Length: 107
Image (cartoon, rainbow, N blue to C red; front, side, top):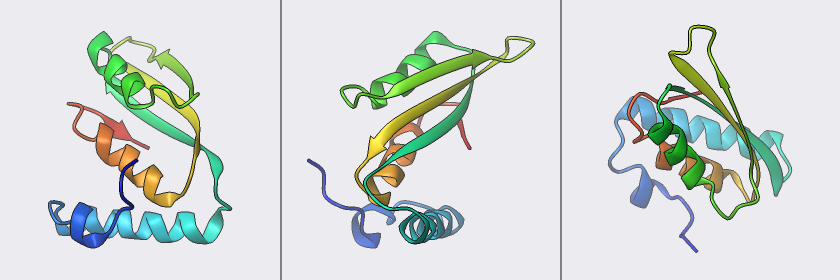
């Protein structure tokens, strides 16, 4: 089990704008949602089986419902992941975990 996100251990390597985004997201998730809850992650990646597999791998063994849909021209794939999350920290951890996938856009 990983430790909870704190400014000291997780935000140190992020730039100021990204750090502010995740702090705001955590506040919103904390104030607007009862935890644990099912959370819907949405990502867009260039259509590439390896990139899609990396997203799926990030949610392995979590009983996640994963759906993919190709764009009309086939250049991009949207990946929706519905999974039960323990708290806002875990949501942010997942966003950070997949953020290293080249070309990913988190919605």
